[in-house]
Image 1 (tube, one colour):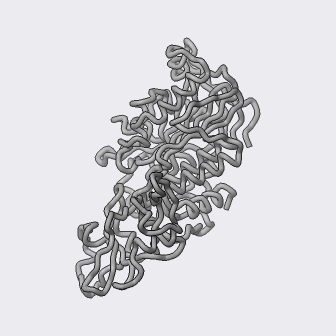
Image 2 (cartoon, rainbow, N blue to C red; image 1 turned 135 degrees about the vertical axis):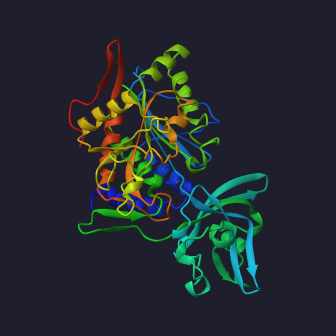
Image 3 (tube, rainbow, N blue to C red; image 1 turned 120 degrees about the horizontal axis):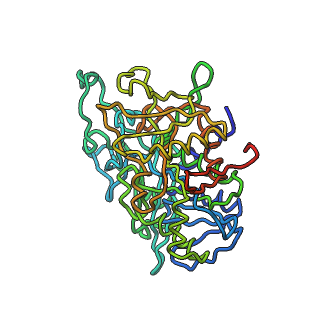
Length: 440
């Protein structure tokens, strides 16, 4: 297993919620010399400076300024969230005075069946009051805490014939015996604060099953939250390992993609637009000059793709059928659910060729429409040339997903090449300026 696959597995295990993902990225960037910025404070950007800014503690944008004079922005965007079960307020439900279960609701379009009979726990953030101040604390309970038990086959003889699962009925996790420590008291104890000081929380149930590398030759990798932490991790690695070019590299992690991105920290928000405009203002660009930079900018919208399923090959396009271990997937859609067009596809192919990255293509089966991604949503705020890419996987939106073990390294190489390159608009086309030496 290569270093990036090992790093990915560690990254996923150490970051069980969107807030942990952003805090982990914050630490990595700080260690690499990137300075934190605040949206509520004035920015003073310098040539050669390295910076990052967060929003809602669940979205992040990092960038560096190799020189004040630059061609455009080279951007890679991914998202921190995955389909999950969110714990409601007043979460305890007592059953016959014997058991306590937790009241949850569904976040995102999850596959519900695989959540049963797995070791689960709780992570997220709690909001704590101290006098007139409210502060946020990360919370992760690093032990098997809850479980959603299946109903025995003896009590439902039709269980294997397919039935609709209802979140309010079927998906409530068993927490303990009636009379055990209450859930609010447990959360307060784990957070190290008095229970009465907690004023609110965003807490989620997550799968604690450890990632696994398996297959005849160890070619497969299964893990929780591959979609989209695999792209988040690959983008950060490529960003930190890239070389300076004539453009400003921008690493973007949005939140809330799984519920439509229509939040202040989602791809449809002004977050990316606000950051790019502030960079331009700080560097003394006029509005016209800023628009010129956008015309010479490029975005990789990075979100995982569906692989050819061994038991359901008929669900895939007859020709464009990505496989696990086949390299980075370039995603295309005639109805523009993906932002890739002929121009952006050509740019990706040239970057991949330069980086020695294997590419495969995904298109939806024409009778099975797919969902949209970050690229076409964010373009409503920041209109730049964009292509959708990702890594092929099986069981998307399951709490335990599968990909090719070697594919993370391929996406890291593509990200590194993107961040190390520039685009230049010419009268007769687009010049792609890549490093003159190989990027290792």
